[in-house]
Length: 205
Length: 205
DNA sequence: TTTTTAAGAGAACAAACGTTCGCCAAGGTG
DNA sequence: CACCTTGGCGAACGTTTGTTCTCTTAAAAA
Image 1 (cartoon, chains in turn yellow, brown, blue, cyan):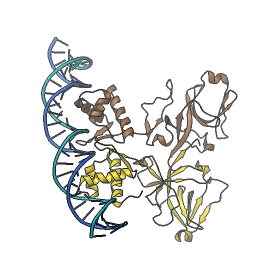
Image 2: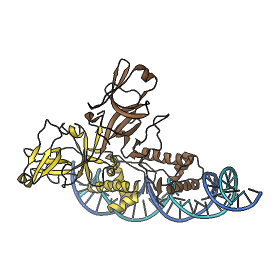
Image 3: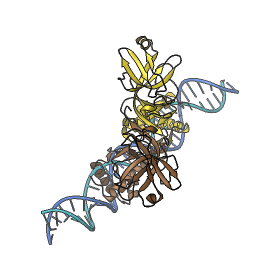
Image 4: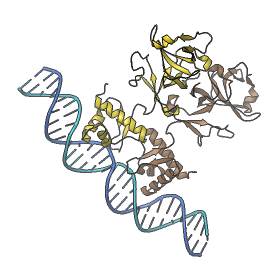
C-alpha cells in the first residue's frame, strides 16, 4: 500500500534512528522529527504504518517498534535504470540484509549477474555483485556500466583506459571486448555507474 | 576482558532478546532472565559490561542499550578446530554482519579460503565461504572437511562418493583429488564439517 | 586476623513513555 | 445540503523504566 508523505517521512526517520542508536525511537521523538505536536497523531500514524505492514507495535512496551524491512541493507538494482537519476534509491524490490559498512561507507547497490562473461574473475551467473557508486573508475577495476545503444543495458566488465578509448573487457575468452572511442564516451553511449567492491553468492556454487 | 558467568549470561540474553524483538530488553527483563531479584544489581552488571566494551548505556533512555558486536552475524572460523566440538561457537575473532537467515536458518559459519584449488567453481583465495553445519553431504556438493593427517587441516572441495570411497575433488587441474577409502573414513581421517551455502567476497575481485 | 573489594538485595523516586478520549478542520460523497 | 472518512490537536492518566541509596555477604588481600 502507498505511503503518504508524512508516513514515509516517519518511517525513514525510524529507520535512520535505529541505525544510529541501535534501538527504536519513542513516539515523542518521532513526532518531534516529523513536526507533529500531538503524540496521539503520531500514534495513529504508527498504527497506519502497522496496518500497511511496515512495522509492528508491541503494546505497552517502551520503544516497542519492530521494523519489518531490514534496517541496514544493500538494495538490489532490479530493472535497468532508464532516465535520471540512474540509481533510484527508492522502491527497490529486494534488500540484502548485509551491513553496508562491511563493504564501505559510501553509497552501495547490488546487481544480479546475468551471463557468464566474467567467470574468469570468479563471478558466476546469479551472483550478486556489490557496487560502490562512483563515476571515477581506475584502470583494471571491475565496473558496472550502462550502455545506451542499441538499448539501455547494464553490464559488468573490467575497465581498460588507453589514451581516450574506453574498453570494457570480459573475463571469458568466448566474449569480445566493447570498445568505445572518445566520441562515444562524450555522447553518453557508455556511462560508468560504479566499481565492484564485493560479491555475494547464495547457493551451493 | 573476560566475562563472568553471569555477565556472559546477561549479554547472551540481551543479544537473543534483541534478535527476537527488534529492540533491547529493559533492566528488569534482564534481571528476570538471569535470576537477579534486584534491578540495581543488574544495573551494576550492565555497567561492568559497558566498561568491558560489550555494550553502551544511553543514560536516561528506556531500553537504552546499544550492542557493540553485531546482533546477528555469521562467525568466521579463524583457526583450525582441533578437538571436540569441532565448531566452537564462541570466541570467534570476527563476525560477518550478515543476517544468517539470508543463507538459511540452520547453524552457519564462514571460512576464509586459503588457496586457489577451487577457482574453477568461482571461489578465489581470500573469499569467505559460508558453510551450513551438517555431516550429511550429497554427491557433487562443495563441502568443508577437516583432514586429520598428517596434521589437522580444514579444506574446501567438491564431494564425490563412489561405493564407499570418499573423494575430495579440487576445481583446478593443477591439483590432485584426495581419495579416502572406507577405512580412512571409519578411522576419522576425514570429517565433513558442512556444505557450502554461499560466498562473500570483499574487494575489487 | 583485619581490611578491602566484588557482587548482589531491596526500597524509593523521578522521568520517560504508551495509550485513550474528546474535539476539530478539510475533503470527498450520497 | 448532510454525512462520513481522513488526519491532525491537546489533555489526562497510568505504567514502565532508569537510577541512586544504603545494607549484606562472601571472598580476596594485607
